[in-house]
Length: 209
Image (cartoon, rainbow, N blue to C red; front, side, top):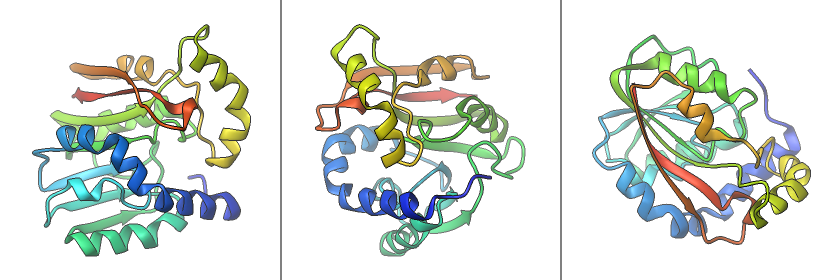
């Protein structure tokens, strides 16, 4: 399992807390729709400081796969505030340590950009989902190389990767999901109207095991 950089790990946690309101303004309605009707136990890959907890029902049991130790304090505080039970796992998305076919729902929002091996993470999600279980995702993706967003992504890829602790703006997450072992995949492609131009090309949807 990778460990967080002591400088960028703290910085990333602080950025997520600072931008929580802005992120909710941009994605809150979409997340509210996608995350409605989740089961009582949810696995979330990289929950960070708890941006999605506002969309979970009080009493939800959240199995949180969070390798960055600087995220965990704010995550647990947010969970207490919202009445959510957290089973915190200091594991990676590629190796969660969870049993085969034991999860009804896995959530991943703006996470597959940062894991070292996203294809392995998607395989791991497929492994832990029961037949019929769902992966609910919101992810930013690689833009068309000849578009304005594509130019911006290439220009900012290296500093963005450093600032956001490994975030790769040029990953083709949709292709990786389509290559996964899912029986059904629904993808909505859109442009998020934010000041964070490299991550405005996004996808959201559900992959069913």
